[in-house]
Image (cartoon, rainbow over all chains, first blue to last red; front, top):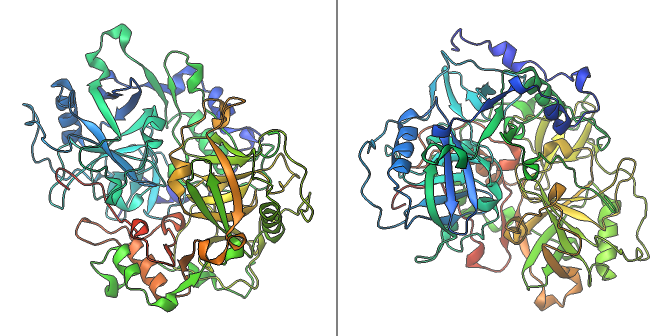
Length: 312
Length: 312
């Protein structure tokens, strides 16, 4: 049974075309968002993975679904747990990259919970779910909470979803839930079968290609041979550990904004010049929550392409 | 209205757990397939993209959905159209790689239809669709035809689907349908909004990482700067153009086999030791049709991993 906190019917309605976005691209809809439609990424929830070659991957940590795991990650970052000796050591095509201390893990810093609870789901009750009539192949319904994609189940539970760029906590066989010392990011088609089976803690919001374009590992599960790594890691820090003027800053489009509703509608009903037929629906992982730098950076402007032909 | 050739109800039934696969992994189910569950890939429908550094991407061409475009590609391959001067020149993260002659395209060889029809959909009628109760975010129903994922629509039409590894024909604005001289492959989450808007002609069946791990292009849409390429292409040939003993050979798991039904069931209901909760469903693009070399090649054995923790 679903709890009264949200209406299943409201979440399962058909995705209607929105006449106000007719002919627009998703990028055009997002570009027209008012300033109030954006929320900042908290510097205590912005994890910066700096590779040894100075490339940076920025990850937003989630607040509501796996608080013990996220607190562990924050504590390890503050203690410099991954500064020195950590690496990306697994790159499995169409699946995940994984990083941490593969061998010779340091002792866990003070403040880290060694055996966190299984923070794979939480009650729907109390969540402000914004649904958009999206159909789903896995869950009873899907929607967004604070700009995070979520799946809702018939038992009244909710989980974050494994989409491209989602960051989760590597673990061994159940009941091990992982500590957060080994993390992975999805680099392929959404492996949604992992939902409810593993702690999701964040998502990559910048520098994704520094993970996704890494050479695939040659061993089973995309592991690199012992002694080899895909990319050494120089440091993993929270943005809040940097001096204020050295911190990167990002904003996320609020899923409770009118712009977000228009954005979902246009992603479900592409009808700009390239398209002959609008889909009339969109996978929750293809909504691709818009993120922008808080300070203008032209290199991060959202591309919005289609495969083009000769001369395109 | 759906035509009588298939039963919508049969396609929309719930995905039931199959007790006979309880506890097995997808790889274990596939490994138990009898020889008759596999069909060979026809050498005239096996496109070999050889990169200049000797790495090879193998693509199976589809027979039933875009025959004029596929005949064009076969004619261009036989004429050596892409041998000399072609390259991968676009790599857009979480979207596509694209290749061909970016500039200075040679004249189209004899036998190529310069303006093919819009082979984006075909009638469902006459198709032997195998459905497995899969739910979908885009189409009325989804299933498989001759081991190809297909989407079915309320107007009685069917299309192939854009999944990871799907190969399509780059085109300009409608009504241009593209000739096949510029092709793309999906390297991210399935861009299903392209279904019914572009000609799908094939799928990568080997060497996918030679595309997906290429460095992303720095310009809009992942384009490489003029004069730079992601990967030069040495040749593009059909396997049938090679001497018989030099041809690679592959087999695809038949979607009308009993093993395939068991494989879908286990992908929708993972319950091997890693999993606490089975999804009870699977996205058609996450079914990942099994392919194997016709001659044993241990490096192609299907991996089947989950993000593991310390020591995993």
